[in-house]
Length: 327
Image 1 (tube, one colour):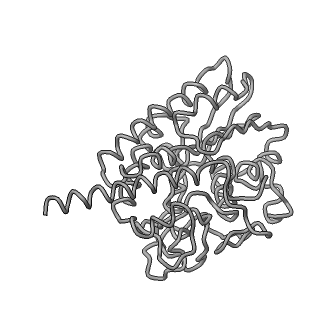
Image 2 (cartoon, one colour):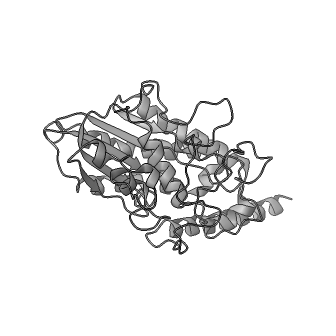
């Protein structure tokens, strides 16, 4: 029996290693091309909903997750918008120019006419964008991106960061163990300090600085698995058989641990992307799923389980936009 258990453990580790490799490949700059209409299967490109996420009825709408974040984002009058992070931040999964960052900066009125004028360029005349996100980036890569950001000594600066998902994907077996997950979260927090330190330099950023950091979302809708009937690619294929509830539970712990950094820094805001996307992962059409969204049963993920599809990028943009104070 001991030999049998040993063999099973090593088989599982081998499969998880393969999963990690597939995940890392899926996070590179080359991602599956959208269909001719810019959508991916299960998506409704350009569609919007009244609520910015898939929270259960009666839950607070997903938004800013920290005690000081109850009144939206006090961005002031930013003259510089900075976008940093991984392939999600770089727009993978959407047609060129329709990732959340370019849409937030300047709406595509053809693709999203209902958002005409709802962008940073319209709200804050003269604002500039510094977009240095790169596919595959982990938190250790943030200093290299920060080195490319221009100074803004006399204006306010608005920063959005999507980072942390690739840190987990580089060691997916950690998601089966809460202590290992916590260790990765601690390292991500340590690495993220580079962002806080960079924008704390008043000689370079003399105005108000607000930093938004995404939580890591869950393509399983917190169910811990991908349904077997879904046509998926990359890491999604193995998640059909290897996924379990422990992975989703530890992802929740990972996000909460990162939230401690936001609670300790007044200008850092953790945006609850995880909560917003619940009900829009691969259980989006499962009426028995705990986060099923009957009013909007749509998929916001690309078929690799990692990137948002065009609808997902629009929803990320909208989630940020709705946290800005009313004009």
